[in-house]
Length: 118
Ligand SMILES: [Zn+2]
Image 1 (tube, rainbow, N blue to C red):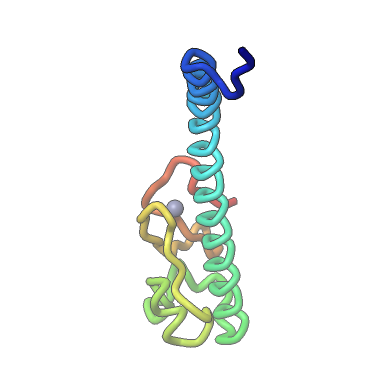
Image 2: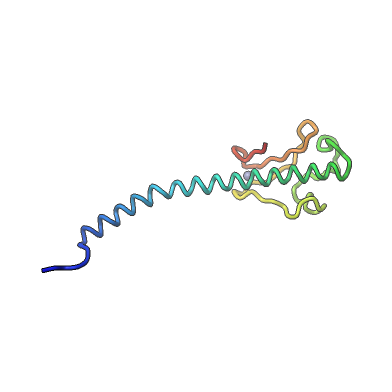
């Protein structure tokens, strides 16, 4: 007798092997996703600092982040005043603060950790 097809045992072995492979790959996807979120956040911080620097040059107020109370203090201000096309948002839900560090423009994400630039 010549039967075609797989036995139940063969199918169960294939399913078990696929399950093991998926369990090995899924944590990798989570790491890649987290890395991508951090990179988006860092790019947003760079964009914010660039917009702050453009504000300083256009308004002729270099180093204004330590003394100029009229300077934008939220990312939304930079968008409202036309220095950003859109207010960025951290992909993991953090919020951005605009800072002056020794007269230089800087931005920080409330998530902290690796959400830092430079
Ligand atoms: Zn962030």
